[in-house]
Amino acid sequence: MKRPVPQSLGAAPARASRRVALAAIGLVAAPLWLAGCASPPPEEVKPQRDLAFPPAPDEPRFIFERTIRSSADILPDERASELRRLVTGEQTRGEPLSKPYAVAATRGRIFISDTVTRFVHLYDVPLGKQFRIGDEEGAGQLIKPIGLDVDAAGNLYVADIGAKAVMVYGPDRQFLRKIGSDKFFSRLSSVTVDPAGENVYAVDIGGVTSERHQIRVFNGKTGAHLRDIGKRGSGPGEFNLPRDLAIGTGGRLYVVDGGNFRVVVFDKDGNYLQSFGSVGKQYGQFARPKEIAADRDGNIYVVDAAFGNFQIFNPDGELLLFVGERSERDGPAKYMLPSGIAVDEDGRVYVVDQWFRKIDVYRPASLKPEAGWLARRPAPAPAR
Picture 1: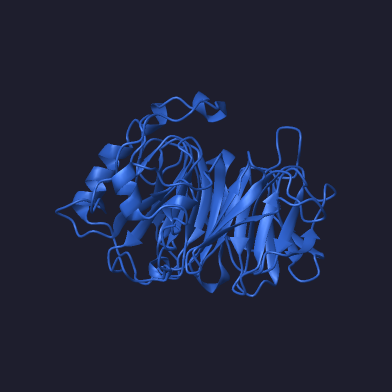
Picture 2: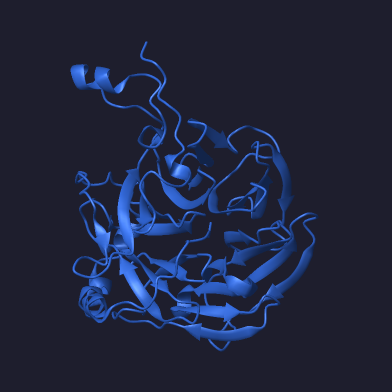
């Protein structure tokens, strides 16, 4: 989900812009056939300390903070104390991510959809607990969860491409209702909800044989279909394989138009305003854009699976910064198949990589490590 940052990023320094241009050139040339593979990821590279973006001598805007591969990376270890692990060499345990796709984060609760295990992981950092959502038989069972979002009340919205519906769960993880059906969707790809939970925006990616390349808007309380935004095409306000949507300042709607290699912008009523981006190898362009997020200043974050990074734009589509690089070897800010992105209330950015089965977390440079929701961690349980 797409949540706020506490400061304006400002314009990227000239030196950073030049580095952006150089770093972006040639990224698209990396092979894309790996997207469908299921081989285990290469050996992990240990994280560096204080990995900053942009790098010195420019003023840092974001600091790489941590990588999450399982619940053990974010929650207290209930089976072994730190001292015992040091003495015995015992490894931390936890439920690993199998094939994460999307992420949403709010108030220290991290939701991660997993297309292999077919449920949503919930890591509740302040409580120090983990939960599964949608894995129990019944009306709320998930088939293939992909896109995620959370409203201000803590309700979770899951785009289930298998069920061709948006599944809604309450803050206590109980199933509430189902929005949409195969009557409405060809290939449901993502879901976004406004903070009040009144409007649910479900993205239908369509396909070669489908004309449903559009945003379908529903009443978040009743599930009633309200209207559609866009249609198949390449003109203003049209889509070719739309992927995701984010809500910016003033209710602006930013849609990743994957097949047209751009972001299309609408006002809160769905009226076309502008678009930015194009296909290419240069910074500010796109090769395989996937998910999108917005912060409270209206800055827009777009993850690109081909570039192996995410780019940050101001509300008018001007590039501010890019973070990450494509790599066949895992490590901080290195990606082979990034797919999801979210920004929480503290401005922390969460990036999903399907290939390396991880979530990378970045902290705004203005936020102290001990500040924010992720710092509200309970003490580890006593060793047994």
